Length: 188
Figure 1 (cartoon, rainbow, N blue to C red):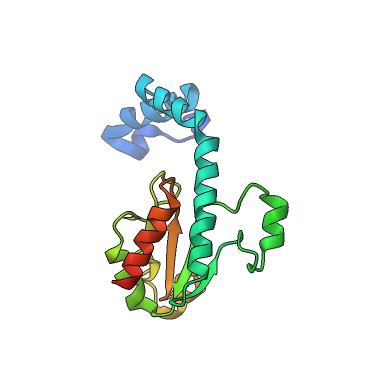
Figure 2: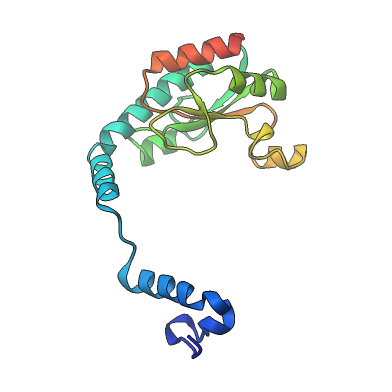
């Protein structure tokens, strides 16, 4: 613990971590040498999830396309940024590089701006208000009032999180249910 560790560029664990040196060394050295170890239950769930991943991704992509098309037809939606839509500027690249679909995460803008985005998120019933992506459940977030609220207006726009932006991560629920949820929330 007091001698330089060759495998960590001469780090002296005790000098750097004091009384916690043994704990840090035991974790760092064992993790590097042996790798992380899943519990049997976690390994089972991971394997089960991998077996159905292609089916779930296919459903995510199909649902996202339906929701994006529906949003594109709405008068209260200013724009939809989804490469799967034929009007998208990168649609040809999407077809070339992602022939099975454009994914399940996309953004759209509401004509009502900031207040409309907050109101939409607060009125959905099926979508979960979360910042992560790729869940089996559909997720919604209004970045300007949540993840990017600490930025000024100009910086939010530069980051793609302007006042009108809403981000969706479409899950595997019925697309009709997702559309109905968005419709009732937009009408609230």
